[in-house]
Length: 434
Image 1 (cartoon, rainbow, N blue to C red):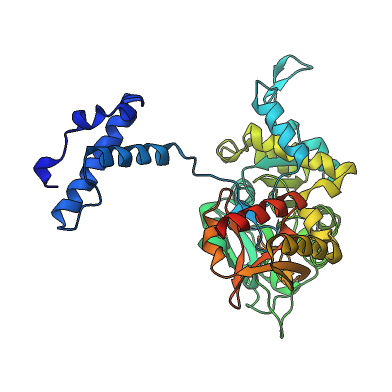
Image 2: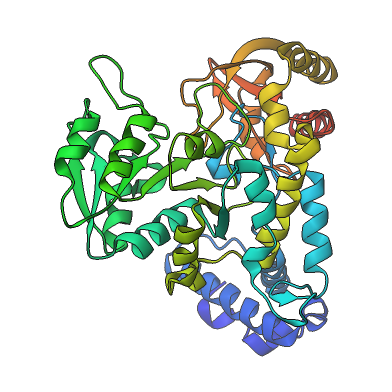
C-alpha cells in the first residue's frame, strides 16, 4: 500500500465497528492509526496492514487501550511485605469499608454535627491517635515527608535545626533529608560526624538561632563498626535544658512493638515533643503523614499556611480511621501485621499447596519487610518454584503476578500471598504455560 492508497479519516470512520464508537474518541484513534501507517510506509518497511479493515482493527485496538485503566491490582509474590513499587501496605477490609461508606456520599469531613457549624477534618482521628500513642494532640497530612516539612516550617523557619551528620541520608527515589530541611525554610546545622555523634555535640551546637533538635530515623540505611549515637532520652534532656523542642522523625512508625523499631508512644515517653511517622508502612494504612505530641506545638502546625496544602483527603482519612480502629482490639486483621507475624509453617503449607497445584517445587527463602523499615530483619519464608521463562507471562497476566527470578527459576514467595491469592497465582501459572 502507498501513501495515496490510505483512506481518509472520514473513510475509515465509515467502518461499522468504528461508527458505533464515541465520535470524538473514534476520530482521535483514526488519526493516530493513519499517522502510524504513514510512518511505516515512509520508512520503506513492509506495511503490517493490507486494507482499511486492518486499519480499522488497529483503531479499535487503540480505543481499547485508551479505555484500559492503568492503575491495576497486582499479586505480590516477591516476599517484600511493604513494597514501595507495589503501593506499600495493602489495606484491611475494615479500612476499605470506611472508604466506601465515606466516599459513596457526603460526610461530616469539616462539619461539627453537635454544634451545627463548620468543624475541622483533623478532629476525626485525633482521639484514636491520642489513645494509641499517649500524645496530647495529633495531626494528619498526606505523607511523612509532608509531616516533617510542616513541622520544620512551623517551628524553625529562618532558624537552625540541629541534625546528626549520620542521619542526613537519601532514601527511595532520590529523596534526601537535607532537601526537605532546605524547603522548609529552616537552616541545617550538622552536628557530630558521619559515624559518631554524642549528646555533647548537640549541646555544644545550641545557640541563639537554634529552633529545635531533629532526630531522623535511618530508614533502610545502617552503620556498623565504630559508631555511636546518643540514647534518645539523653537527646531529650539536652533539648529540655535548652528550652527547645525535640522532633523525632520515625519514618515507618509502628504502633505495636516490633524488634528494632521505635514506636511513637515510646518516643513520646522518652521525651519527644513531636513525633512524625507514616501511615502506609508498618502501620498498615493508607498513604499519610501523622504528627503526634505537644498540644501547643501541634496547634502551631495546624495554623501554618502549609497545612492546608498538605492535608489528607477524606478517603485517606477514612481508610486511616478504619485501620487505627483495628489497633484497639483486632490488630491481627491488618495485612502487614498478619504477614509479619504469620508462622513460617503456615507459609510453608501455602507454598506446598501452590506447588502441588502447578507442578512446582517448594524452596525455603527469606522475606523482607521493605519500605525502609527493619532493613536487617529476615523473615523465614517459603516459595513455590516454577520455570524461569514464566516470569514475563505472569507479569502480563490479569491480574499481574510479580515474583522473583533467581538461580534459573521463578520464585513465588507465599508470605506475601493470602490463601485466596495463592489460588489466583495457580490459575495464572496454568494460563501462562498454554
